[in-house]
Amino acid sequence: MKALVVFDGRFYKNSGQPCSYHLTYDLFTKRYLSEFDSVTVVGRLFDKEDPGAKPVTGENADFIGIPGYVGPKEFITKLPKTIKSLWNLDIDNTAIFLRTPGTIPFIFSLLLLLKRKNFAVEVVADPYDQLSKGAVVHPIRGFFQHLYTKFLKWQCRTAIGASYVTRYSLQKRYPPSSELNTHYTSLNLGDDWFVPSARVSNTKLTTVKLLNIGMMPQLYKAQDVILESVKIMTESGQDCHITFIGDGEYKEKLQQMAVTLGVNDKVSFLGKIADRDYIKQLFDEADVFVLPSRQEGLPRAMIEAMSRALPCVGTNVGGIEELIDNDFIISVNDPQALADKVMLLAKSPELLTEQSAKNLTTSKEYRGSLVQERREAFYRGVKEHS
Image (cartoon, rainbow, N blue to C red):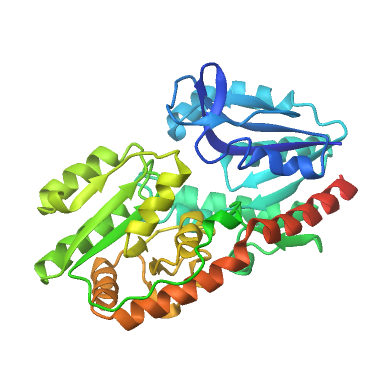
């Protein structure tokens, strides 16, 4: 039996091959081959190169591209081709996984209903938060928020099986109806990611080095809030520097915002980074990982930061509450709270040491081998019911 994985992921053509930064053959596609003979990935394919991105295809794995689009207007113009591509997918002797929420997996779920074909869902985010005020700027944002929340609830009720990236957070809002349900992150953390021991801090931080990782097609990761908190800290006498990893349509606006706020000299925009060893190095050089997200499933970058024993500050969205100490969880859109938590850590070597140890311990629950065991059990269940 083969697996078919359908979602809204963005893929780009490098030397004619479909490529991605995070959804590569080694990091993503190959995991399905532990239980299936072959796998086909379906996602948005943009006809341009993205240097550094790596192939999603490989041995026993291929890719079918949906015409790339961004935003409702482009989607409408490409809807006929999208429906035709999805309708023509080969679903014989196939286990179907919809990585949701998303427009493409929702359309496909309706087509599967017409074809009387079962599907499973892998829930990776919350559209209610994803389309919240501030995360997306659009005149009918509220309509889409309501619509996609309803979509996902229906998919979880209809699916023969449901997996979630969170242990319990997403399940509360989008409960499964099937007894075949589990949780596992999309992250594959090898043993090489985990540092042998926690950090020990002996002095206050004169300059606190902050790190944030997140793409910038929207302000889901609230990089604007981070910039505002940097200004607050600077005016409070706490020296700091923030390093952003990620790219997208909002990058230039964020760079201009840093200039407008007068903190441009305290900000580094590194763009996308494909070199995993370099990312480890940046984690190790940082003092605090900050993720004041407006929406999350289970943040992979935060788990990676924790595996490097890095203290973290995050918001009360998605699965963040499952990861870090409640004392370092703040409300959404609150730059003052973010600044206060960072300054608290900077002034307390004891807290830095304590949070480092707690985060490293928690991160070990997400070792790749443990996560893959749950994935494979879910794959087997879906295969039996497909």
